[in-house]
Image (cartoon, rainbow, N blue to C red; front, side, top):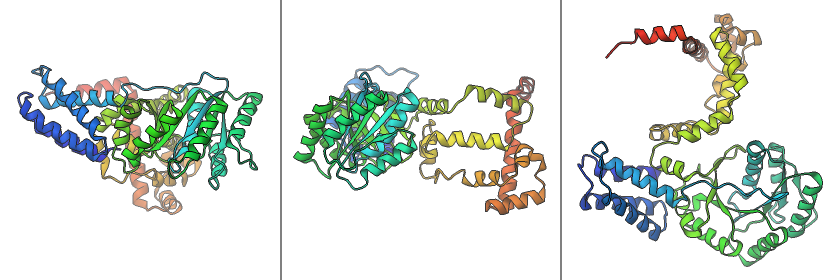
Length: 442
């Protein structure tokens, strides 16, 4: 995410490394590179200039502490300005109505329908809402079917009228249906076009007038850069939407839309979306995004993702099993499933401070655990529960059954044994104290 921008900003700040203090001369060179980096990321020229002017004003007016190097101070100032430019704080969706009606708008191909499914899943699992999806795109072939498939994936029913070509009537009927069936949230997926046209604008404006939504979200493909910002401006002038959704952030995006859209339309980015998984939707936090752009990671979001998969009762049971040396391959497989639910593995790794560059060129896919899972699932229930049973002939059978070789099976069993020993030490206070006492002193 924003890798090119991160690299260029990092190079810009290297200008100040080794400098004793911030001066007009050394800051000018640094900010010139920062501005170039923003322009390359497709940030509007006016916004890029105002941004660097603001950094210069704050940097020259600040006394650099003796304990803080100029480069570090500049990164801190830039980070704060980036967060301010992107909105300073997160903003939630308005769910006050009964039902709360959320209207989804945007161009064709921006990811509106996929986002509608993701939002339904988000509101169900994290807000405890009962959600009805509405198929309001009556033009695109298979749009209704796509929404139904997504609805099934997230267990959210879809209201559609197969024979109707009137999206305004469909939306009105859907809301009546939601009231009768007790749904407290309605998400209306609307039609898009390949480009902005009067017919599309009239139609979405008519739906807005008919249903009076609590929330209008404009979905935009972040890979389109400054074009996304211009499109958002035109939509906002007609719809006066409440927030922006940036999709396809896992693609080759340059970051311009995320950085400058707030300054142009004066509406917050509320969600960011990446990938096709229904769980791949996050609330947009400007400060956390600024940290990630500057290569500082996003440990808060990483912890939150872990907590979402954390079951306190299961954790207590697991701790007891570890203490009794009963942690087995079924438990190991369960932990892998929880990690996978947290999201894209490469994206998760990049949230760890300092890991962004380290994993950038590594091929970390969602299939990273495939071989391990195949080996464990090729074991019998008895072998999973009691790894001591895994003798040579059993390992040969497991290798053949999992499509791996004996070396891979041996490696996994060895790593599992070492992990289990370390986990047991970590849960045993006496062993942990002994380990600490035996550590070499400086």
